[in-house]
Length: 213
Image (cartoon, rainbow, N blue to C red; front, side):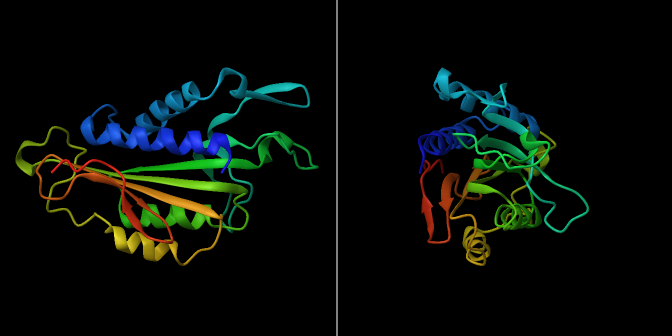
């Protein structure tokens, strides 16, 4: 695992752990994108934040960078957060900046159902993904139905939660990219579920966050 991928993963784990204790830092999933982008950018050494392609400078961390292919859909997709592989290896084609190989991609989900997570796994596992290391952040935020802090929270009786073992089963159905990890976090103010952070890979489910129950 390259240094930039290690930094991406460690920053993600710290970011998700922060979500468990301060789940309302961001109002929406897009807020999570923005806050993580800032934190990852700041974790990189100043000399590693930028690179060049054909004498044009660009940031190594990108928001909404396009997928290399359309994955059999009507058009290309976009990744939430991408880290462009260094040194830059451009494809021999026009618009080379639009098709750079990626060292890491992070896809976020906040209070999403299983379809969203399965879609992220399918896209990151596609042979056209052009991604070396895929990370999926799947976070849940729950509060009481009659006294929700936010209307965007889930209730403890929700049917949306996708259990961790089922996530692993989906992962085991794919073999690309070589490294694909789901960081699965629950911040439950009602204490109906165990709050914590888990790492889910094809090999297993491991708790890596604090037990906040």
